[in-house]
View 1 (cartoon, helix red, strand yellow):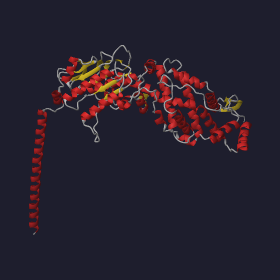
View 2: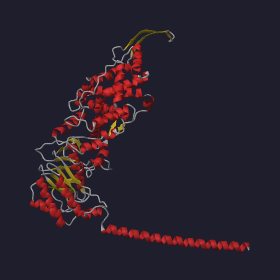
View 3: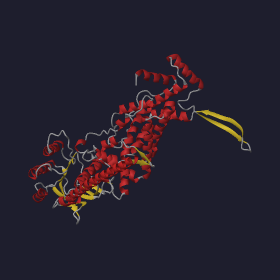
View 4: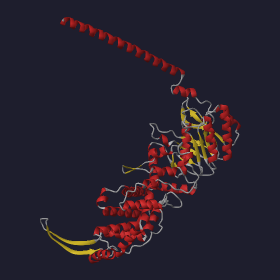
Length: 595
């Protein structure tokens, strides 16, 4: 804001006799629902400027979408490049985290949710702070409805800032009054709607009380009161027996003289003359009202700016509750994880949430480690669920440590400071290394990036080289992971080597899971201790139609089809020739007749 404009506002307010406080508003409480130490995510000055520009009608605040997508947490050491892509975190948010209230679907800020899930807190108290909010929202239906109402009104407020109605262009003062009225309603609702909250939601109540106690809020309340109740008129009406109005008399007219914005008619005229004589301003009543509204907003705006941040935070909790209700309707279970350091990782009836949109529901399974720093080797047939299990474990840890519901009936998880996941290998034309080279590079990257405590998830380790060399590298990785003291999950098709590891136990932290199969050698998508006896490659090939007999039959069918097509084509050519000969004969007979 330019200095000349600020002076002009102050002069205008002073000439009107309004005792508005000068300087910025006091540093009020920030209603932060994610961090133990309340803070404003992103750049507060930038957000405040964008809102101010939108209120003044100079431009819309579409840049808010980018600013509100920022999640700024104290450094935790998590590097999203090491796990987010392979766990399909973006797809999880897009497909699973939605909000629908009273039949209306609200857009979710995917960038903010992605930021939260990509940077879980390492402080157990911070995790439990979020869990307590979810627990209270789930158990207290009245509080949940109050939260939904607050979210709806905040969304409406943001919508007014981002895309002002056409009415704002016709009557900017009416638009500004509507926006200030909604802002005051939100502040008051925070006080009344969350007074009984015992979790972090009580911060909404406390922040609302702080704002109400400020002089800036008093100015806002007086302005809106004066706007809605400038004067009170009492009438006496007399009706006749026929129902018609006989007399209408004014008994009393009381102006709202106690309001700081009240001015007697002569005083209002004097104010306008004073502005013109002293400062040369020719202001109409409309222009004076416009300047007054701007001045009031600029005073209260430091209190409004943190409220906009609440929208994305409330989305996180409401979307998590919505996912839990959806899952339970399908007969699955979600819960809040525990973090007992005296117990190892233990997942009961865990499932992969990325499979919820498929035609068939995901099959829950159990994953239990015996040690707190276990290295679990997973074996079994292709398409048996190994990769999906690895993905499930990673997502469960991510959601649990973020303080959200996890896709499991119960879950005890460790608190870690980072995660390394390698499940998806994408080929590019510019790759300088072959599969073995890329495998070695990812192993090096793993040990360069990871510390302790952390989680490592690797799919088909050393599958890009021959078994002899691959097992040597595999053995080295296992020993190094044991020294690093990470909790690790590794899938492999080196069954003979896995059995050697099981029998020799080169490191004490080794554990083994195998895919469980039924009598038909089909995967049940359950896992039990041990090493698979066979990868069932032949059975898998037969199931997918890749056996010698099936492919031979396919070749024969294609040959028969090709031969039939050739025969049909020859028949078509012969028929066409016969028709041409017949036409020529008929034409010759016609010519002979004419001759």
